[in-house]
Amino acid sequence: MDNCKEINLNDYVYVKLTVFGRKVLSDYCSKAGVTGKEARKLYYMRYNTIKIQLWELMHIFGSTLYNGATEHPFTTGFVFVHEENVK
Image (cartoon, rainbow, N blue to C red):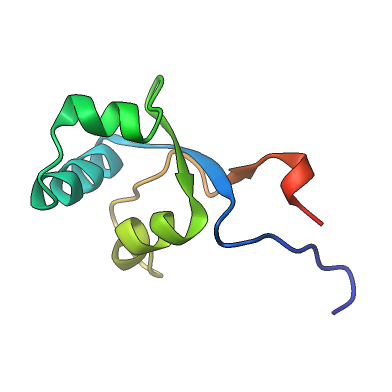
C-alpha cells in the first residue's frame, strides 16, 4: 500500500482523556476490579494522558467512537505513537 506506515497493535500509544473518557476508563476498571489508584499506575496516567497498548485502547473505547457521537473520550482526534514504532 503506497504512502502508508505500519504500526503494531501491541505498541503503546498515548491519548489525552476528556472527563467522559476518564469515566469510560474508570467504569472499565471498576468492572475488572481495579481501583482508581491502580488504574492510574497501570496506564501511567499523568495530566489525564494515558499510555496504553493500541489493541486495549480500541477494546475499552471502541464502542464510544462512532460517527455522530456527542461525547468523545479523547481531547483530540489524535493518538500519539513513538516514532520508532512507526515503520
